[in-house]
Amino acid sequence: MVFLAILPVAIKSTTVESVGDITWSFDGKRYAVMSVPVTIKNSGVYDIDQIKIFFRVKNSTATFVDSYQDAGDIPAGSRRTIVIRIPVDLQHIYELEEPTFYHFFNYDTFSLNFSLSLKYLLDMVDFNSRYLDDVRWEPLVKEFVLHHPSGMEENGTNVIITIPYTITTASYLKGTAAFRGNVTGDANVGSFSTEFTLGRRYDGTLKLVFNVNATKSLVTHSQILHLSGEIDFEGFRVPMHTDYAWGAPLNNLQFEVLNNGTLHYSFQNDADFSLSLLVEKDYYYNGTLVYHEEERMSVEPGESVSRYEEINVNQPVDRVVITITDENTGIRYVEVIDL
Image (cartoon, rainbow, N blue to C red; front, top):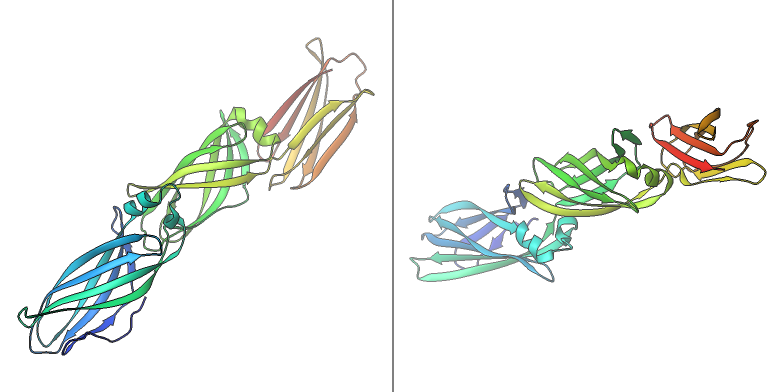
């Protein structure tokens, strides 16, 4: 923001020569601070005393700052640049806008009402001058995007989905922050945690961690995953929620044994990564393994699979166990069919 280069104050030889560009900073606690350099020239023969800067920051619906700053004196025949620091209380905005927290995630234009009050000529003359201008509000979180998942894996008692992400935060923020919370799907609850650098565009990786019991749902059912957490920086916590469309690698997996003794199974790869599948079929009779066979197939994203395979076992069979393993990720799915 740049005010007019030379702004006359309506009294004798005192002038506001310039109002410079706004710079933003964070005080490390709860305030986003606007710093506005104001140069005042007193070319008269009397000192200017008790300068007060009054300021109000608002938009069409709410007032965010209404305060003042003591700026001292300007001796006769001198020029002085005063840096006005206007603190925008993030905690106040937080409480004012809960639960939407609009200004934490959205740009806006604020109206800055700027008033300069001076004591002049041994306090016999008291005057003020008022200026108006617009200020561009830069939200704390300007962008948060989850990209195509880079993989899915089982790790001990957990199943982990790895998702690259991009987050862009306000340029006045410094240091690092953490984003932690819970993720819920149609039939499962998990958690996530990541850290990122503030004040710029940052590319990172988010890991969604579920109990291994969620594997079947995540592998065979495309669903919306709901991420709900908080961005934590310098003790300040900003809630952030987003949804992610998860594409299951074996979406809508179905098995059936036809009356003619044919095994049929089908699915579609809704994931954003290729599959290298090992399909193993173990045939049992009275709890004893009587036959084993396997095959391999590659399945690209978006590709559908529909297989009809005759059961060629030359003895009675009462159960078949089908194990599908993606050799790229290690994810395994087991289906037991009683014949």
